[in-house]
Image 1: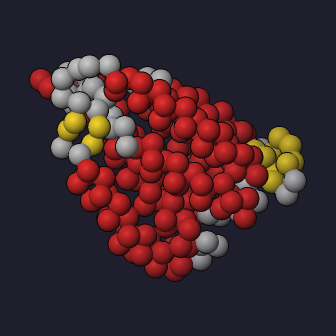
Image 2: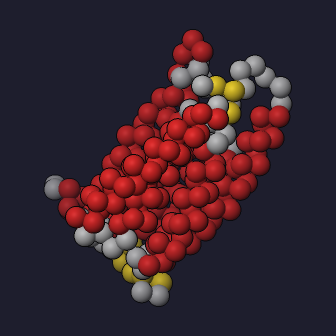
Length: 213
């Protein structure tokens, strides 16, 4: 059985939402995305396997929609997700589970600074790939990669990057006529606010090594 035949059921249209022909891939991407962020809010390690499933569903969705740049980026996110899963399990002291912490300011500013050249390079690449919104896709990708890096290290500041990216993602997916996906990013934004509050409460409880490099 070829890959195309394997994923064909995921491209079956279930219903229409405006101009968006919602497939199993988009619907399951909606569900796994919402569950994955909810698990992240609770600092539950199962957010990683659910997130990996979400990446696979979006990979199928974007490829079928001929958004090849978006599809290729899901492969990058898959690699980051595997790394984050391993980090939460074994990235702490003496290979123990990683504890929640805050990032040092220089780490946050370095990631914010790196987002500028990454956005510039990706804009050029996505323009050549005939992406319909190369700059905005590049910007959200750079922000998401920075957010995922901080999340992989279980650092509180990941929420600021996710929230910034989600503010851009919502209108971006409406422009791409992926309305259900746009709505799920509205939900993501609300969950990010909840996650920021939940993690802040957790960090207020005294424990050693609250700030990491």
